[in-house]
Structures are given as C-alpha cells and as structure tokens.
Image (cartoon, rainbow over all chains, first blue to last red; front, side):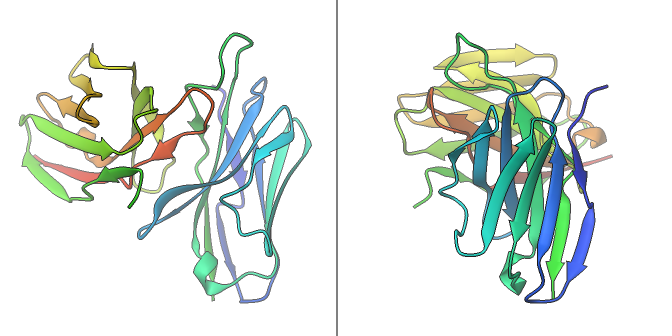
Length: 118
Length: 110
C-alpha cells in the first residue's frame, strides 16, 4: 500500500531554532507539494516541485523557509530561524503528472508534521 | 477576498440525514473541481473529482458544479457517523496547483 511518509510527526522547538521536515513521496510520483494548515488560514500551498525542480514557491516566506528535493525519494522543508507564528501542521503531498496532461489531478497527502514553536 | 470561500461550520446532523456542503469561488478560469475529506489528525484524501459543470455520483456522494454561478456542492446521502470529518473543496485551472477552501467540519450524530 503505497503512501507518502513524513518525519517527524510531531516537533516542539523554541523560537530561533532550525526545523527540518522530511517527506518521502510515493515511488514513481514526479510532483511533490508542501502545504501548511492552520485553523485561521486553512490549507496553504507553500511550494511544489516537478521532477525535482522547483515550479512555484511563491507561497513560502523566502527569508526563513527553504524547500529542496535532494533526490527523487526525499523532499525537505526547512525553517531557520523558526518563529511562534510558524506553528502549524505541515503536509507533503505527491502526485503523478502524465505526459498528456498539464497537471496532476490527484494528490496523495502524508500524515503531516505538527510543529509547535514556543 | 479569498479565491475560494467555504463555510467552516461546524455542521451537525443526525445519522441518516442528507448533507449539503458548498463552496463558492471567484476565478472563472477554474476547470477542475475536487472534494477532499480529512479525518482528525490525518492528511486530506481525495473523495470526488469533476471536470467542468454537471453532476457526478459515487455511491452515497454526489458532486455538483455550477460554473455559471461559480458554486460547487457535495451531497452525502444516508450520512453515517463515519462521515464525520472536515470536507475541503479544491479547484484549479489546467496549469496551476490546487486552491483549497478552508474546509467545513461535519459531525454526524448516531
């Protein structure tokens, strides 16, 4: 049963610390998304990659957030330095864009990383 | 104003009721419309997917799209306690990533 995995599931840290979240997309998927979910803002797209290349990171605060895909099986989202307002659940999702379609229709979400910044 | 508006609820109904969940949107370029279901402390999962206007039925679920009114709906017949979750609408143009609504929390009382 293929699924997206995320680590850690929970993270509590202090303001100013670096946070790294990791995602393993479903094998064979070529598109990876990072989302942030809060009660106030709902689900917000932070960045997404296709074939490991960043396509859009306009939703991400550039001064403190960075997203990378060092290889096809790993995506990372880093926050440095972290702030209390970064407290949220961060989801990774992956999907498959076929050659004859413009963009993926189905995104498979991971279980999320619940981040608390004190 | 957000591109996609969705009433956050909560919506509480008795078991067996028909549930109607709705979203409105402002971007007339949206062509693909989806509903995701999210259980507590889980990631969203795709429930229904429709392209352009019309209805689509899958078991107890019916998705409806009215592009002229920029309005989409999800109907759940014979609702069950296991349907208790947050339902998020999502939509996109051909090239863009998904834009999500904020989600409606549904509670089905046994």
